[in-house]
Image 1 (tube, rainbow, N blue to C red):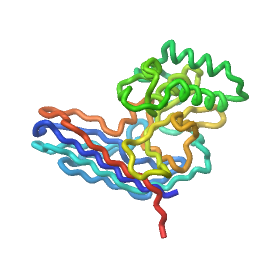
Image 2: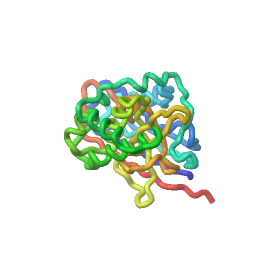
Image 3: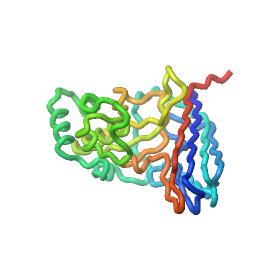
Length: 272
């Protein structure tokens, strides 16, 4: 499938910027199951200083905001070819980070009593193998945390989300990752895009999780939708948790964001 993506982020500052630096992770990566066919990033009010691949093999661009600017517009657009024949299985591990590091808890995925109770419940369910156990875990996370926006934010931990009782895809991923690590599986966070058949315009990107299973490799789990990722999914960035895969991180002096608008369009492209 060819998926066309247009992503615009518009920042308006409360006063002219003295100094601001942003790191963006918005360009998808060519990896198992997808190839980036086209991609471009255009800026108004800033410029790209350099681009690099980080330790998770995420492409990052460092952007400086022009001194005195009162707004910054980041426009990304491109086409990614996806292949859903693997049914969510990415396979072998690659990159600079050893698998054992994906078993470590992070501030956003540190387990507590609620995650531990979820793990015990998952282990009590009948299952034949590790993959079935992980699918059961995904189902339990979705049951325990109904999808509802406005109750959590980027700093909410998986344990906190469970205590709140409502959350979004980011929270589902953090809870799943936390529990999977308690069960002994390496697990990681994935940020990306999801093509939906019933809409083109979306409010935000999507998040899911991946766990590593012996003799199989990395397997994707979209907890929010109860499936493994297929050809409708585009992987952009991965990490130990959301912080490693955040689309934008920034520091600034002399100004703060007054407001931010995000426009995201995702649609299937049919070449003639």
